[in-house]
Length: 391
Image 1 (cartoon, helix red, strand yellow):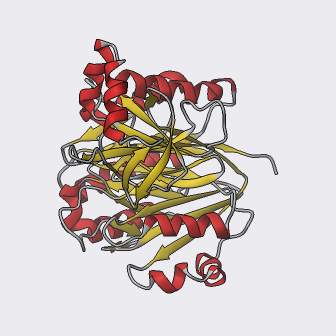
Image 2: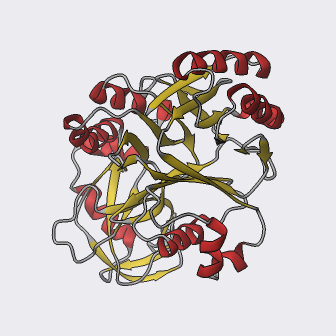
């Protein structure tokens, strides 16, 4: 099993494809590309179809899929706010790949019938990993993930929502030599491959956990009988000056995945942003549906916490066999928006694991498993590391 990752900053599609193909064939050989995962900046949206066809012809991969990203990752770097295309390619002996495509319409009938969904996906229950890339304007991601979790329980998924599109119906996905302006594309990997998936949410809890005593859709009206704003003010009063400065990065709400857990901490929550506050009632709007009776805790995020959390999640990987390659899906609120230096997430990965062929992009929502179920995240770095497995 061999992976390689290449990046091109050329603004010309033909020049970029030639550069990428030369580097990939140099590492994998002229007939060695089984999988090619492509990410391109919004500058190439008008030429996405040409890009897909040219890469398919130049690389002749068994499977090619990809999407547009506000920023892209490849060749050991995070490339933001400028034209770039990255390709992460692999030679995967003994690995079966099943490409999957979801059109932009017909979601209700597909997701409402698990037998039909399982048939449409067509993947084996022996699948080791799903890779999923989706258009944010036309894909009901939460119901889609629920369907995968029901039809394929326990099988991890990695991926993200395409980002950088100025409007719906932008060609933001690639499947083979075709550019798609909606829906989702996926890939099931089966056989002699091990995929370790890491989800680093990069936030730390503050204050204590609360039980939601009144909520409607995404608005919390009371936490243990008091308005959320009152609880927030109490927590802020107890923060030191350093944490009050961190609070300028925004306040987040963590939804406990196991409310009965007596030791809630990092990794125990799904992190969602605070979208707004009604100062008259003290209600708080959150970027997710909230149910009465669930446990929540407020969180802070800063660059140091994000880096430390990713390092913590990666540390067990340092004692294992070195990965052959990886895919990294980072929130578009990370990168230079969070860190004061380039290559914030990919640099952390490479510092801990050494030289690694890794590619990815900055997402409008990241996909990864927590507690055995796949979720749509925000503000996270989701990473899949690939190694060969024994027959």
